[in-house]
Structures are given as structure tokens and as C-alpha cells.
Amino acid sequence: MRQDVTSVSSATHSGTVRLRNEDRLLVRTDIGLWAVADGAGGHAGADVAAGLIVSDLNQIVGGASAMLDPDQVTRVVANTHRTLIDAANARGVDAMVSTIAVLIHGGAHVVCLWAGDSRIYRLRGGDLEQLTEDHSLARELVQSGDITPEEALRHPQRHIITRAVGAPAHEFALASRKLGTVPGDVYLLCSDGLCKVLTDPEIAAILVRAEEKSPADALVQAALANHATDNVTAIVVAL
Image (cartoon, rainbow, N blue to C red; front, side, top):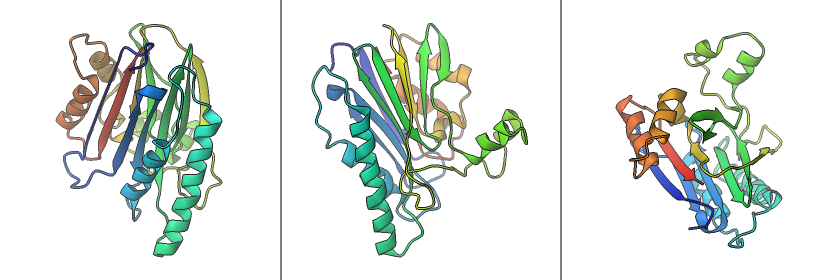
């Protein structure tokens, strides 16, 4: 455990309907690196795509104190993106695709990297803030004013993502955001299977419970209690 990290918990589940879990997670607290990858349902080899992202990220070597170079992490994922496109072509399938959400921590900063609709949140002083912006058709429709945020939750095309690792139709790019930290910050990385069934107030209420030994497991169990049909994954990092 890094000296500037108080606790880390993680949990994943296939959900209440699906037999296979196509989510993958990475916990590398030793180098300040955490990631959630959600294999895109409907694509062949979605679990392979998510697994390869996590496997490649796990090969990164970093120091015990200095922050990893975000450009290094991006280069690793870019290489995975190309590998997945080649693998899909070799298999004769349209694509092998996954979302990705990465949190890098070191010193007084964190960096969020992401593609797709897996999310990163921060709880600070009891207030929950979504740090990432979904790369999804639903979000684009909300931004254009065609639908409301409430309508986006029920939109028939709400599952369509507009950026992902392994998607041949898109030029590879990870969104990036760097933020300062304060002691007591809590960061949540999750697949969309969690935030589709839990509201922000519900997520915040679980994260602030001091008695929770594993807030990630508590979040996943709450999602299952709300009949989560998708795979559900959470990593909680407390500073």
C-alpha cells in the first residue's frame, strides 16, 4: 500500500441476468494505477478485449512514489487498441471492443484517462462529482438538446458508445483530466452497470459510511439489489 493511499477495495459481478462477466479490473496500488474495462456487449470477444487491456496495463513498471507518466499509460492502451483491431480482422469479426477508465495517482494529483461510458467519481466533503464525461450517443443527444438527462436514462440507444478501445471506426484517443487531491478524497471507478442502477445520492451514501470495510463490495451488492442486469464493477480508492 502506498503511504498516501488509506484504503482500496474492489468488486465485480456478472449481474442478475448475464451468465458471463465481461468486465475486468486492475488494482496496482503499488504504482498508483487502477483501471476498469467493460467489454462491449454485442461484440465478439468483448471479454478478451477487456482482459487484454488490463493485462497490458499490468505490465507497466513504475516507482513507489513518483506518479506514472500518463503518456506512457496512453501509449500502452494505444498499442492494445491496434492489437485488438488486428485480432478482430484475424478472427473475421467486426470488432473486439472495450471501454476503459484509468486513475493514476501520485503526490498531490490524480489523472483520469478514459474512453467510453465507464466512469470515475470523486467524493470530497460529502459531495459526489463525476470526473469523466461519457462517450455515448445518449450524452451527445443531451448536449444537443434533443433529449433531457432523464430521457437519456430510458433512451433505446443509451447503450451505444461513441469511443472505445478496439473500435476500428474511431481514431484512438483517451480523454484526460488532471486534478489536485486533498486528504480524505475518495475515488470510484466503475462500469456503467453500476451507475445505471444507482443514483449519485445512493452512491455517495455508501461511500461515506465509515463502517463499510469494503465500499466497493457494498456498491456492487446495492446494484444487484436494484436488479442490475449488466455486469457490475467498482474500485474505491481512499486517500
